[in-house]
Image 1 (cartoon, rainbow, N blue to C red):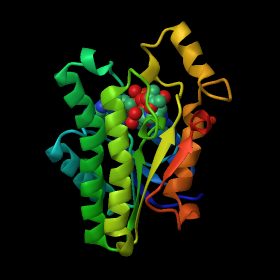
Image 2 (cartoon, rainbow, N blue to C red):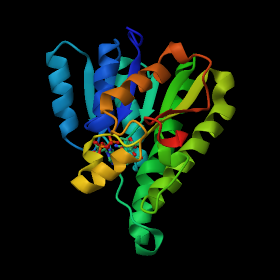
Image 3 (cartoon, rainbow, N blue to C red):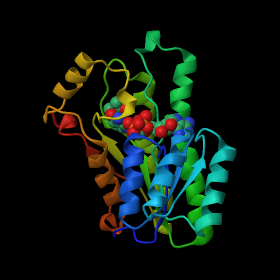
Image 4 (cartoon, rainbow, N blue to C red):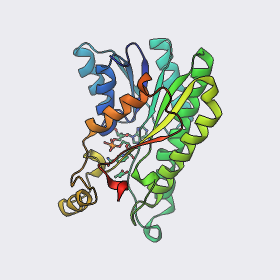
Length: 247
Ligand SMILES: NC(=O)C1=CN([C@@H]2O[C@H](COP(=O)(O)OP(=O)(O)OC[C@H]3O[C@@H](n4cnc5c(N)ncnc54)[C@H](O)[C@@H]3O)[C@@H](O)[C@H]2O)C=CC1
Ligand SMILES: CC(=O)C(C)=O
């Protein structure tokens, strides 16, 4: 029960790594707000509440400033406070730069970087209002560190998330606010649904473990970063990548 009675928001909590983290947070005793623009967030919440957990779905587009403010308001209205923000929502539609439309570039930067900024900004405002600090985990990636030809906007956004995480640590650590990023290798989630079998085999071969990660493996690392077990870990990144960046 490492998150007993903590109030957590998971953006992008309706699928993949976010959904696995919602379940892991709830198992650790947290009250969890699932923030997603996909209606499936309600199904996940209903299922968990029927099993005795305490969760809430707030339909949210993380690129909307007003919806992000509304997310924090609904969280505080229901649970009285906010302790953990996991800014996880993201997309991965990309192409080498010459083939990437400016519209697609902007959409990726909007969701994967500006969405993280908005989630963090309004979480920090709430932490300051209630006092006593708080914890943020941001969605980075191996592509916060290394790239490939295809993930152009994605790498720019994830590189930005890494430095945003460092920046927020330097600005708010004195207020008891802890800000870290989780940086997975390739993980079996719907994000990779457009990759064919040959592509998936290639991605597997890029990891020394010779396999993709599972969402639950990332969720365990996120629980560690969100909990007091990581009390002196601030402004850093936790690579959970089966050795991808060790090569
Ligand atoms: N699957 C992978 O291989 C890796 C994923 N990541 C990152 O982990 C995070 C989660 O990815 P997955 O679980 O794999 O993806 P996923 O596609 O399974 O889940 C992403 C969730 O984010 C939601 N979402 C997307 N745009 C949104 C928006 N504007 N507002 C609210 N919700 C939005 C989607 O509806 C979906 O429920 C992303 O930030 C991704 O970049 C990082 C490294 C590897
Ligand atoms: C596929 C992906 O989203 C990665 C590795 O960040």
